[in-house]
Length: 142
Image 1 (cartoon, one colour):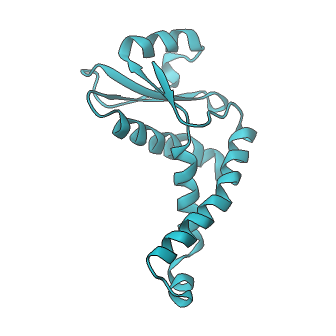
Image 2 (spheres, rainbow, N blue to C red):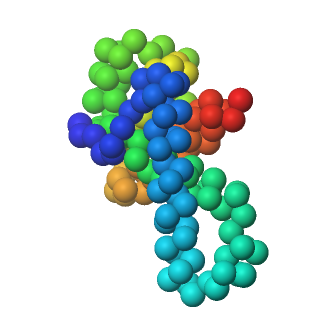
Image 3 (cartoon, rainbow, N blue to C red):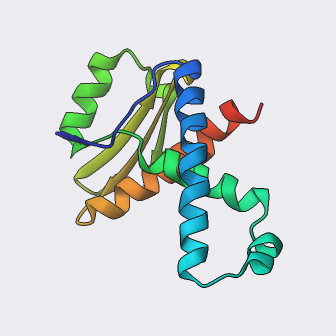
């Protein structure tokens, strides 16, 4: 088992702080991207609405989440030792493949897991987007 990513917030306050920290980075990424796309000031003002910056912030936050990657037995062992109940796990993918990527959200009593066979990077990306969409978004926008 190994872990990819920068952070795994254990409290809602910590998650919110990390999410807020992603805001300035999102603004810079969007500004520099639109500059590379040769947007002039008018096009920038017309096309870069607050939702664009918010989407970039969501993506930055999600892409930095720590994700564990291992085989199915490592996931099951981690789950047994973690204190999460089986009912706390959202399982994505097929039960007929050997590997699992997962992310725990302790303050929401949730674990998001996805299975994969040969594409760990794709699985990690899918997992991060699902963790944000299924757990963090509700926590940030309630």
